[in-house]
Amino acid sequence: MRKVIILIMTTLLLTALFACDTEYYEDTDNKAAAQALAEDEGSLFDVSSEDEESFTLQETNIALGKSYSLTGIYIDPNPMYDDPDKTKFTDGVIGTIQDIGYASPIWVGLNWKGEGASNEDDTFYYNTITVDLGKKEKNLSKFTLYAEVCESIIEKLKSISVYVSTDNDIFTNIGDAVESRIIDAQDLTNPHNGIYSYTLNLLNFTEARYVKFKINQVTSWVFASEVEIYQTSGDLADVSYEISYDVSSEGESSLESSEESDYEFVFDIHSIDKIMMADSGMIITSASAYETSSTSWSTLIHCQKIEDNLYIVKSDAIYTVGIMPTINFAPDDIVIAIHSMTSNPKEANNYPNVIQKIASLKVKTGMYFSLDGIDLTEKISTNGTAMVTTSDPRE
Figure (cartoon, rainbow, N blue to C red):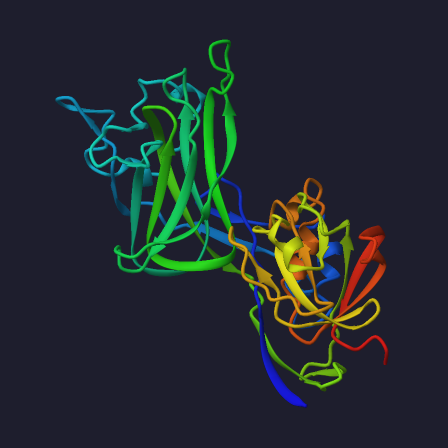
């Protein structure tokens, strides 16, 4: 029998609106759903304060006024659509519908044959913008670049990847941004015309001094106006408490917490051994099914079977950021995968699985899952659920 001590640190991770330097969430619509996660001090977020009717979270754009380097300025023989003072990308100006086109001074033109432009495998070109935050900053949660589409020569970007570094030498890729048209200016010549945001939201915050936006182009020009790097602070409930549990050789276990509180949540399970669909829950029963599950942006919970329809969690929930980690399946192991397109509970009406995604992050080693309405042999879920508890449901 082995004794394991786990330190649980829970932090609410949310995203914010695109256009504000400092932003606040005032959420009451989802308070009931949030309250289900906040029955004790170890909650993901606090909605029970006597002084507050809602919980708040603040995100601040710390890229404002910061210095940066870039590639792609076209010189033939003089610079075109230039940024000579290196201020346009961090001046807080995104642009309006009146700025769409070639004439507005807010745009910086990055050309695929501009100064410092690079190519990969002769298939596409890319340019970069690297922001120096001045010092290593923690709790970096959101990264956005704004660019326009105008006529056929300035089209939508192939992709934007975000990298972080502490020394401006070794950079780590933390994910790809998601495209969204924020100003629609479509016309008969190009239905894509408008201003677009390209945003990467992190569920697991990161730290860095240098942030690099790698802009992968499909046409010769990119016209961009601004980059934003958000740092999260505010009413984050960083709560620590210990849980100890014993696991016997027979697989039986008991769980006790230094806080007298039980965590319980019911997850909806929509499929077994399929390809992960947006805003859904799935159970994976084998390594081969996992390889084809497309769960690279999901929460993964690895569980060991105790008896029919009862499992114990083998390791803390993992949130995958574009990369599927290696999972070693023992006989009768399962992985519970939870996905949502957002991490912001304010968007629960559009993304119904977001509350379940947030709840899944609180699942820790030694907790229990009870399955209902699920046939793993036939791979059928009939209104299937997986309920997690800190205590053994057999007791």
